[in-house]
Length: 135
Image 1 (cartoon, rainbow, N blue to C red):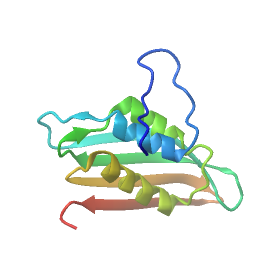
Image 2: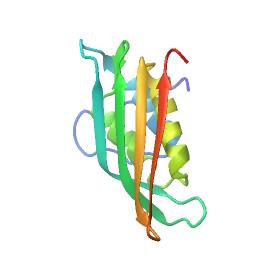
Image 3: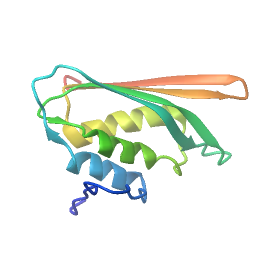
Image 4: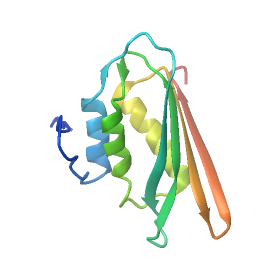
């Protein structure tokens, strides 16, 4: 994507048009990393859509990463995660995609993404994707 995307500094946040826009904003809103070793985000109200039924899947996302030169700005992460609200995706693919998008956006030394899908039909699901620069 050659076009840069930025979120407004104040006022209401626009609704993401798609996951690609959310991914671009993650990268464009990244900032210089301070001297920290580990950063953890916990998104307690994550929603995606089941690609088979179109029903909403609710859950949580936990992202822990070791920054390299850049950090993810939290407002852009909210926007990015919101972009999945209308996206059909399996829980397993969500963990992998979010981890890959962090690599794309900031090239961290490592990132671990855990997606906790709330029970539906009596079954809970937890998936984890790990990416390290050494691999």
